[in-house]
Image (cartoon, rainbow, N blue to C red; front, side, top):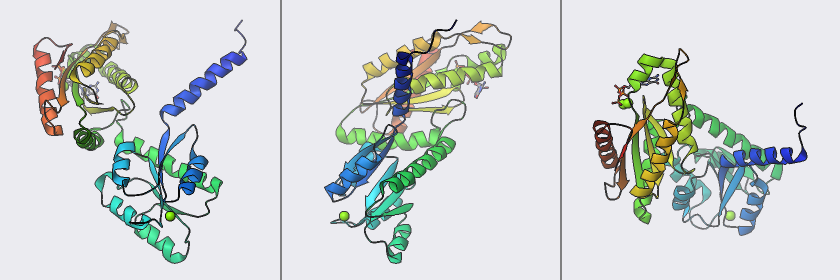
Length: 314
Ligand code: GH3
Ligand code: MG
Ligand code: MG
Ligand code: MG
């Protein structure tokens, strides 16, 4: 007989659910010159699914956006210095923030203001005083739309990892941040060994399963802010933020061991194993632009292949 489901089991399961959701918590940035408004909006929005970063003036907005990378921006209109309209217009001219959902919050709700909000490029507006339930409903709807559209346009369907283009955009910004704050950034090219043979000997579907599991493995390891992408075919690229060459190598070789320890099943039910080779380049010593780093990482990957595969070259 199955053991009855106890209260303890329930607590453990609930805990696990909350933790799982927390990993994909959306991030909202609230900007208002009135600290009381920042507090009220934050309190209304923060939950297991949403974290909030508050900002009491807009002067450091671009830096704060780069640092916190919010999924949605709630922007007050009347502020000393540039208004919410001005800021909204500036963000819409900045490629990186063109698609960031922006909700303007304003005490003025006349037609003129509503029109100006949309002309400035806002997605929506809210009238002060903001109704808590309405705020939550509007913000959650926007976040969900944004998440779905990102899933569709930025993710590789087979592996669940980022596609090359969004990766290049994101890593370019991270690289200039890393330069500014003088932190290292490790870039790694991964390529599955003898993958053509995997397809030929075990079938294309088995090959797909390898890519899927490697994608999931790369997605689950590393930190949330690290970037992982499918570069194309059986090639992957990982950017580890703030990691030195030694640390990055250590993390990658653990991942390599994990993959080597996995057993796959071919089309005829036969078990097989796979490995990958990798080339690692670290900013700033190996280069400071993405192009330089990719070139160095790629030539080291080539060396890993000619030195016998299943290895990481630094
Ligand atoms: P090496 O160890 O030198 O990297 O050898 P390799 O066989 O892995 O490299 P090669 O570039 O010759 O072959 C890569 C193969 O990956 C060829 C291609 O058919 C296969 N491939 C690319 N994308 C996919 C995919 O999405 N699914 C499957 N099953 N195979 C793919
Ligand atoms: Mg204000
Ligand atoms: Mg290849
Ligand atoms: Mg290969």
